[in-house]
Length: 622
Image (cartoon, rainbow, N blue to C red):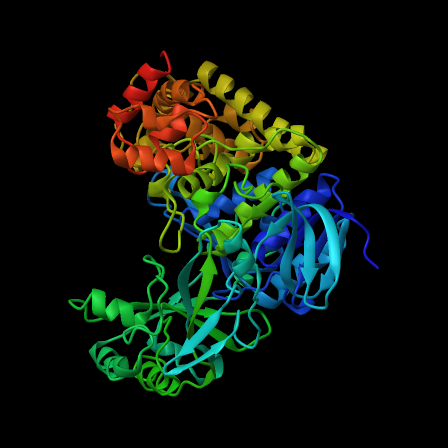
């Protein structure tokens, strides 16, 4: 009934979909197994993609040739570029999406991807021979063989859902959990632990009074996520989100439910996300605050369902209902479904290699929440990397690994493997020490050529990157040669509060002034406007960023070169840390557990100090 596959992907969430698409587009024969074909790429939580640092991840996935950016652009109902008031390294795109259209678009793209087969079933066991995975055994008893397996189980491994004093088995509301895989992997020496995440109530939008809320409109300039083409969404057609706030009465009502709270009564053992806490956690941890912000988000074009972002909870349905009705605009709200918490198994990611292959079992890859992350974007970027590397390993090709200096994806995977996590890991710009280089505007310039050489990014992507790169070079050269007369530019300088010039100046030098914008220089200078009339806005913006931040970018590159010297120093595979008495006990313990491949990797392991690295260098003859 089943042919042999190169790769089996277990789970069709955001990680599984990207893994299947990447491996298939590279030429592997892929089987995507999911419990329910109707929930492929479902937005289980909020109907949005991107946000602070997460937007950079989606842009990087797109630059590599993944699907998340394209799907997001096709299904968005609102677009915003966050942090515009800050420097370009902090700009982060975010889209509100039609959750049904998002999932439907993902499925359509997968179905139109050659080499992807689908099967609806559970996977209860892996076929493992001589510490190498050979396939899977499904709930219906099918043995399906493959050269590698990618596990993207999300919150389904031994999942338990909590609502007040009620709890029941499930991987998502109204969907069954998955059993067997955790128990089997524990027998092969893996460690597992429990994490918790949650979701807020869904509300009937017709029952809300929006006049009591603040409207949050989308941007006029819709940049989107994919480098291939602009999204079809028009600024005037965007759907608004809304903002309202809790108050002391809401908090007092929520507290009445704490006696039956699964979180406070110890029924939930797993650790929840630090940066996306439940509403009951917020009012406990931040008791000095008399209100918390809630984002009221529409779930799509043709639905009245509303997502209440910021009100994640596991309290009883009655407590949720009574408290939410005290929020301005929610006085007459009607529930579609209550919020709930879910506990699930994950495997600490220190048990992985940098290609996301497990250390204990060859050709077995983990991606997504099974590694302790939270968020669609974090899952999707692991998925594309696991899919690429599963393909590489089955074809006896080199692993594809991104460094911290090359991508946010590299930062995320490096953090997981070197530091591990005991709480749901979420990406932030502050985690990326080289964020000046890792901007959302240049992900294509950083990553597309790498992917093109692999065979994932196609010719059309590479030609766009070449065009953009050549355009930036041309404009920078033109600006360095073009002199602008005082009578041409002084009125503009006065209008932005800048000092006027008495002698003509090169355009690129004028651009270094605070508040001076390249588009405005082009409008004021006829020669520039004629020569640059055919260039897209993103090329002009990229040029401006590179000129304005050139000094910072060069310093960052110098720092990376110094760091890379450690990355080039390989640690022998069988290096005996125990023989070095001067190493701290903690360093020995961590180094033996993670087995870093280079001194650079060793230097980033939590518990390994700079003095430990110096000692290692001495013992390695450096």
